[in-house]
Amino acid sequence: MKPEKKRTGSTRPASRTHPARNSYTKPVARPKQTDRPKQIDRPKSSAMAADFETAQPKTETAHTPCPLYRKCGGCQLQNMDYPRQLHWKQERVQKLLGKFCRVEPIIGMEHPYHYRNKVQAAFAWDRRRQIVSGVYQASTHRVVPVESCMTEDQTADRIMGTIRKLMKDFHMTPYDEITGKGFLRHVLVRRGFSTGQVMVVLVTGTPVFPAKNNFCSALRREHPEITTIVQNLNDRYTSMVLGEREKVLFGPGYIEDVLCGCTFRISPKSFYQINPVQTEVLYQTAIDLAQLTGKETVLDAYCGVGTIGLAAARQGAGKVIGVELNRDAVRDAIANAKTSGIQNARFYCADAGEFMVGMANAGEKVDVVLMDPPRAGSDEAFLSSVCRLAPERVVYISCNPETQARDLQYMAAHGWKVEAIQPVDMFPHTNHIETVVSLSREN
Image 1 (cartoon, rainbow, N blue to C red):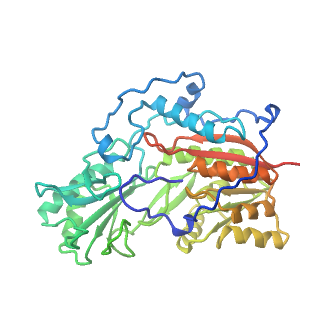
Image 2: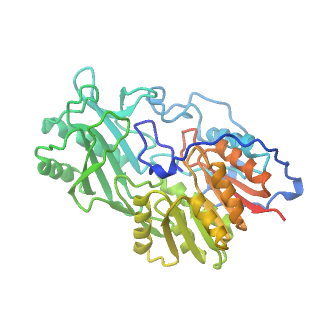
Image 3: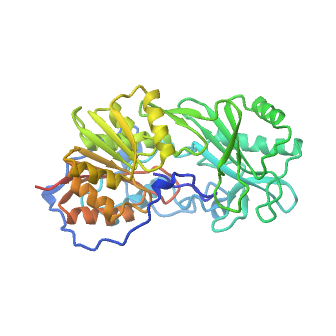
């Protein structure tokens, strides 16, 4: 789930970046009109989506409220107003997935601005030797200065401005990745929208941090909402934001946030959805499509830190089994379950496909499989494991309808029927689309 703006490399756990396999080529039978599912009950927060069904496509306009639209490249659809963006995304999902099932109207945001709870900026000198911070221009390492962004959390933008000012006061220099000289390389700000807790991660090119206590005190005087400050060392020539070594300068070194009634601990490297408003919509849609009655055993593949699995455990699953290859993420998932007081969820560090094969060999059954793979989608080995385990229902969350279409074709050719397709706009003003698809085994 999960696109990041083109600032720097992703910090997503490595276990969620499986390579894409060859496209599946077996033919898929077009479902009959009588096989269409009933209308999905959409969350009440999707007021804009309710009007979308009767809206007519609008003509593209020069709607570019951000002056950095062409330089930044992070918001590809700013030449359209928001209703037109939703129409464009609806048509794209229809084109890719409409052959399997009726596509429900996309669920948009009521307020599609300043939704990103994670903001990261690169620091550099400009031509006048002034310190600037912002995003990398598309396909370059040239920093485009950003004072404020229409998709980023406004608190984070203000903190970035304060850090630029304090760098002058403390005689701190931006890091030059060509020469390897300088101090501050990136700043990462994460805010819990429900808790208000704020984390600031200072990514430096050297472990030596002169006057670090005074710097942290000055930053907190300007922003008392900051609850923790971490120094991360990244002295390598790399596009990755974060390095391997960290030192907590203030606070506990993490923040917490509440999502779908569950409390999650967020550390500098944790994967956590960057739009919590739409994440609640996305996960609630997936749980509704799972049709939980309180008796089902649910397997959460690609479970990460346990977000959707814990939400399902709280909202009707009899038992949840989470499987994730990244050991740190599994540890966080276990801690999150304990913090939220959830006792009907267990998490295992393993390859999800192999885990399902082992369950099938042992004669164990699950009723629902929740899967949320990376943009590359699933591979044939994983999908064949799902087929072998033979749950009653599969709920497939995707951040890339192209690879999802490929995977659905494989599932349809192996006895599965697509029952519902629900797009969700997780990243307004960008070309990214999330889709939730439910499948059941055909008799």
